[in-house]
Length: 249
Image (cartoon, rainbow, N blue to C red):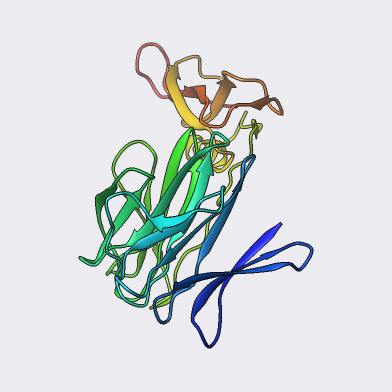
């Protein structure tokens, strides 16, 4: 266990171990910002905004301190988020100086092209073998930037000026939910909430259930699988083979 804080007085970064041992990192944190920390089998990695240049810095799991990648300028008053995937790969997320979501590994930063509300900070989680970020958009909607594909506006309205939170470390195994006999939209929510992805959707014209009902799933319920594994579904069309509406009794 390790905790990272923005210390008072010197504004230096402090790292506190579970046993209470504190280490002062003699680098100043930007005013109004907080550090982020993530665990891996190799140790802990901490991200913070350097007061001297306003860019993203980190303390690596070997204790070394330095600027992240090629230098990512962070919007004033906002804080980084950090996550670890596959036990070792580290990625950080910030609100860049241009107002967009930026993500960075140890090599370079990338503008994700997702606008963020002024004064807010992103969240990041390891999921499906990659990373997913959550932000508050200028419209105040919660926007998700998934590991694969374009950003998605959830249409969930956030309180102005607040920031989302996400689990920085995703479970090593995902439990497959039981989605049989539920509506397809509900089933897909349950599957993605479990850290899995939607696989192939096969239509069924057997008139076994109402339209949109899940009839079969490609992985048995309550099995543990790798996060990001696709789950195939068979879904009732509500029509027979001749495209006539089913009569369900």
